[in-house]
Image (cartoon, rainbow, N blue to C red; front, side, top):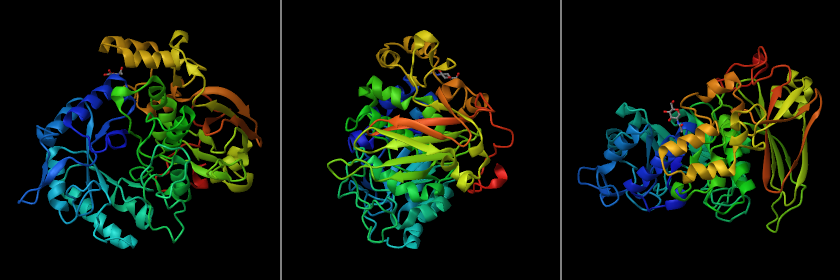
Length: 490
Ligand SMILES: *[C@@H]1O[C@H](CO)[C@@H](O)[C@H](O)[C@H]1NC(C)=O
């Protein structure tokens, strides 16, 4: 979790931008919700010196990159940088192809904690999984050789089946061409909507939220702790989507275990945006200790379509560490829908055809966006309270003129602080701020039903009615870091 400058600022980067942004991440309580990486994207160098090492642009970074890392580390942040596995970066600055060792040394010496490694100008070294693997593996080996722990983030746009080999050498891999600030608008530049289509040779850019979700659905299970599908940086707050679309975008990225890198200008953030990205009940899906992405269990294409011919509805479901289950009803149709799914289908991962023990239990249903929490009535921590910060509180956080004033608002709202209480701990305790609002029950063998607005998502956490308080039922916890979900855990 963190922030990357690209979606708003592209090449307009500087030390000042990174440090002003990190200050706000801290002030607004976002760092303490988990947003810790501050990632500088393309356009930071002036080229390569005669010694073969990259030279930072001192007009943008007057004290060099090491000074930026030091400042960020002092405030408890982690520093990310960018390069490309090509002769040039995407904005045509010097790339790292065939200079992996030198550049990894530079990153390590500057104190970099994360490398986003792009795919532009690769000199034709792609076309089979092995060719791409070898090209990306050069940087993996070079980073490892430095001895510094650097999160390695592949940005190869899903090319050459990166989901089948990325996890062997990297911590995350992009599954698609670049995201753009649209929920569902198809665009010819985002050509590869079907990863299995052999004609798909240009992952491109201008991929909508829906296009990316559809692209990753067939291999969402490739993501595991330490090696994640990357659905690209967030567009929340940039202005091209409605509030409901941004909530759906954020929820899907969290439940599908994509990195959550904010892409908005924090200096111009509004209350609506803050109260989307600081919802601790949604972030708790992302940070769930079990580390399993939800999977798509239903897709309905026979719903009203928009003027582009786009319209569909999807149901996603997945197990969480404490024995709860996350369920998302995603409505990308052109009108409001009544959506539903049977427990037998929702627990298909635990056993198809209604054979799962889970399908034969009663479940409490909690809405992770719930009603708005109000600081006047005990805040987000209240028993049945909503998970989302109220607009007035969010505005007060943004408007506060001193740290004390802002701290007082966050305390009054009883806002979640993962520095104080890590998500794993909060979930194990059944902290109500992570569990959303209780909205109903589904009886054994029954169906979960909800009305879902056009271009919106309903996000539920099902809790075994026998358990309660977010505690696991006996025998139903246990991580599955071997990548399989089998009966043995149930
Ligand atoms: C979160 O908790 C930590 C540790 O107690 C504290 O230093 C920090 O100020 C808290 N953050 C906020 C936003 O209150």
